[in-house]
Image 1 (tube, rainbow, N blue to C red):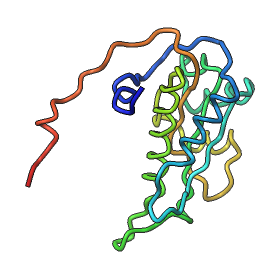
Image 2 (image 1 turned 90 degrees about the vertical axis):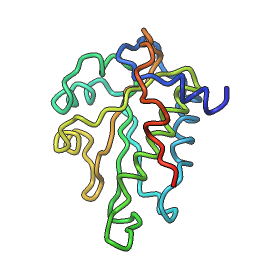
Image 3 (image 1 turned 45 degrees about the vertical axis):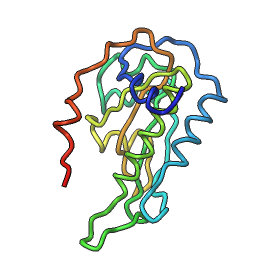
Image 4 (image 1 turned 180 degrees about the horizontal axis):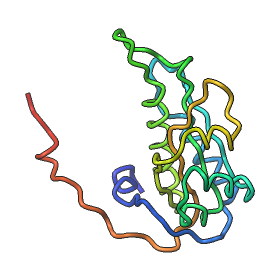
Length: 167
């Protein structure tokens, strides 16, 4: 499958089978995320792979959607603002770099026949506490990871002509 096919196939899945994710697949997915580009190659990201049911139960305080916890794995993508590149006007690229890594992760998961759902609507303080994140590590996104139980239909996308400005 080529990358354009993978992008078109990817869905935000909200229903997962209990079947475990093979270690080899998980490692290939994390390797794809690790190889994501980052500004000035600072690589200000880290990944928390959550399989422990007790930890998942604690995370419900941060994001209380039952479907999220049906997946066998949850991955937290975090940024490290202190080590990231800063643009001349001071803009910190840590969250952008983490988002690029998350994108690589979800596309690699799709290629592996697995499903994800990018979630950012969580209580940051609770995630920090539950995952015992060190000072300076910021959770940017969470995703369940597993085999889809049901795959939703494609969602509406604006026509390309509405998104492009040629100058």
